[in-house]
Length: 362
Image (cartoon, rainbow, N blue to C red; front, top):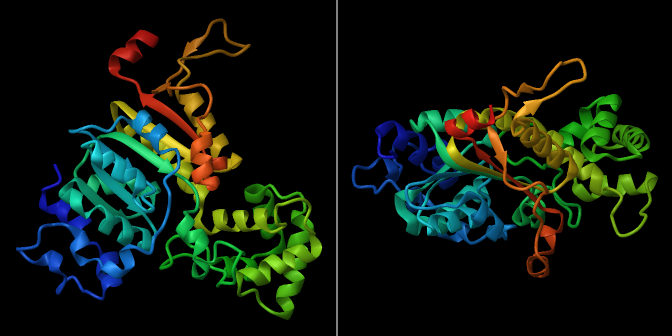
């Protein structure tokens, strides 16, 4: 399935890998007839160990997706490769997507021992349909999204996701494209900043903070994370343990990477990409994403619709899923002890209905 020339071209000789290693398509070892079609061969070893991220809800994800030999699982947010490694260990083939080149390099090196069972692709999960088309894959048996920022991204000041240490105000998952957070803060209109802080950060003090930032940027543009965090704290003092800039940083990150737009796109595409009986699992870390996933799964798993103006309930044409649990799954006490950052993680899972299930429900 993955041995076609078009599949090898799209996965095993990606431009991002040539760029990150200093190679060109002409001198890349992946173009050599003797190359074993494994992109990890071109990864710099020194970089592979730099990416650190603990996979959250790992046992729950395994139970949800049930990886096994013969199954194709897509990890739409590859990160450090922890979830993908667990799926591969169970015998599944894994296609791993990520925008972050650091993540792709590290995960590819980490998973080199699985050979051609693992296929990394530099892409946003919103582009999964085109990725599968390039690989000539019509349907997949499982799909995982672990939406959020990795520990590596948070702990690397140069990426600009955190204000704990000074770094450039960037926040881009893909550092080769898009507008940085600095660009958004320094050039967005006042009303746009207010809307971003309100919608993506659910920040009550959005108007006060946005006005202050607009005034301050006229004196000096915002360049660093600590500079922005300090400006927010001036007009929005700390109350409790949470830093006053926390929601602002969340809002900017979501806007910079169009995270909700990407999620909305994939939620709409997923039913056409999943095989009958396939599982779709999504891990979220804040209420905005969780509400989107919850609503989509609920709408697509409701067999019947009823409205006051109708004489009788009607079959739901959008019903393609079966909910595997009513409530979201959260991290266990043991996991929280080992990984406190998992405290806000929520997992929701659905199963694609079979034709027989459709007939039964209708």
